[in-house]
Image 1 (cartoon, rainbow, N blue to C red):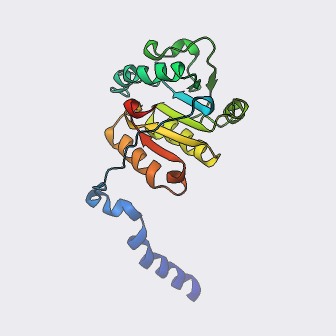
Image 2: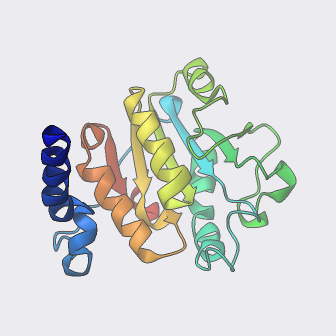
Image 3: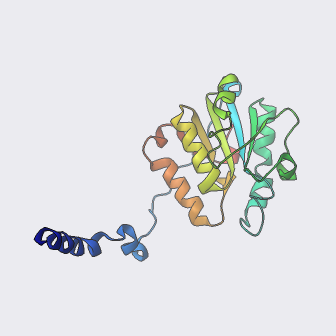
Length: 205
């Protein structure tokens, strides 16, 4: 009985101090002043793939991600560059989307494969083997949503040993904060900075 009372007293004492962690200081948190660096990159065409992630009507529309349609039009030049350089171009969609839902601004070519899966496009899609079959060493990833398909697929690619380039002007979300924390996470999370490079559409060759 005495032991139970002491345990409850201890829990009551410890609880409020750490009950919600960062939530207790939420209003006082400010983003880092240092912006992640953006780098110009030159890639080897035979071993480079472009992953076009979730640029479909269900995941790139004005109500949920109002900046996404304009971003999709912006990345047209990188997709065209990838084809000109003979990169391996792969489209990835969410479970609710089909090829017919891909935005016209980023329409696929007939020879380009499409996979369908969860936010992490490596899960249950065969994407890793597809890339390995084409001798891919570096992937360039763009699309929607920054905190979903982009973050999870990029991290998964890095953990599988691929080098990854992410154009920061080629990923979008419902809020700028989501895009900001993804850019920070990709350059500061354990192991990711070893493999992930932030760039921009006009700085990728």
